[in-house]
Image (tube, rainbow, N blue to C red; front, top):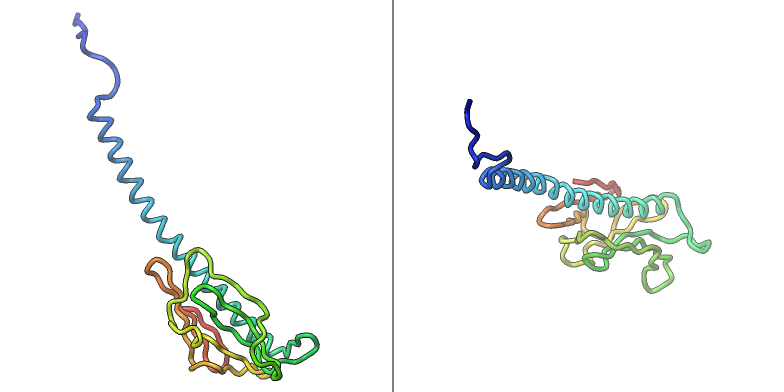
Length: 163
């Protein structure tokens, strides 16, 4: 019969535990890196959809001949007022400036990076035919977040495309 060593015990050695922790740490880092990139892409895509939707609302208002206080505006439009805020507006032909109808703010750190001059982002749609104007067309707006970019392009017919 064999004698049991008094130094023999059940369990893991310190080296084995450190190796297991190192392997789990590497797996965690790979998983975190692969999941954090899609989050920023999703935030950027959501902002792109919001802006494209706002442009489409302005175009739709012009095509429908939507009135404001029973007055038919000469045009409906969209513009960025800074790199975070954008507006849907109209102009009735008599007031000295546009009338802001709705204002929105980009969220989650997304910003407008191009055009750099916000006045170049102003686009109008004439009532009731919806023909686009007010900017050099086609107009491309570039949204950015953490080095990633998404663009929105509006052509002279008012068609909005997301890239």
